[in-house]
Image 1 (tube, rainbow, N blue to C red):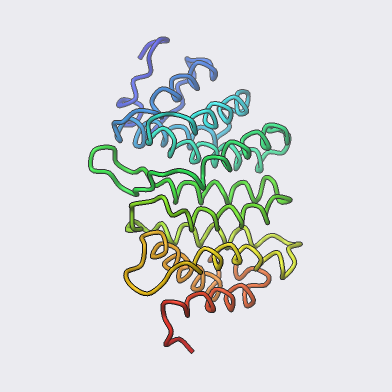
Image 2 (cartoon, helix red, strand yellow; image 1 turned 120 degrees about the vertical axis):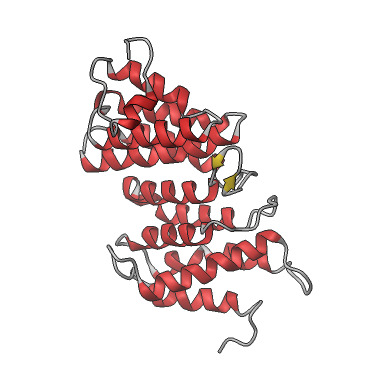
Length: 272
């Protein structure tokens, strides 16, 4: 190792000790470079693993907002793996900011929220796994960021529910969920619903977006987006009935589950 280059394989082999010979700002720049790599070992096994651990340990507290800004800028990156790992970094940043109040300003959080909400429902490449690029997981990673934003910006929860509805019903996709994307999205929706203060109407209102989108689905083979939507609704129903291991069942779970079941009767007419 030297002050100009991080030896990522050596750091990974040693279980990611923090390289304190390098200023945090310089190391953040190094991480930003590896987090766009098309090589999944460099990007995921090295870069993201290091970033998530070191952010949680507080090593980047002095540059935390800069890390969030850099991640948000990657939503406009031309390469899919750079875009889809940006929300994971934001999750780590937002979680650290929630754990230690005062590290992240509301202005910065709102700035990241604006970038995220412009990207998430519109991302066209929603493949979960690519044999060359490794994990991409735009839907799942974005779902995790959605849950993190719900804690950081609780006043945005109704908007976040609507954002998930737009993601579910985006018809410009050619990938059928195969890597638990439906469950990750359902978990995020359940976490958004967990926070106090939502009315019954707010908790269920976002499903009107889904219902309207499904009005145009007629007999015959389901479009891919509709298949994904029904899969997510099924996962959501299970999450609402069973609850989350760490948070239980959210308020208005029964009402949301009933509305979800109404929508599931469209393809599954035999449901009681």
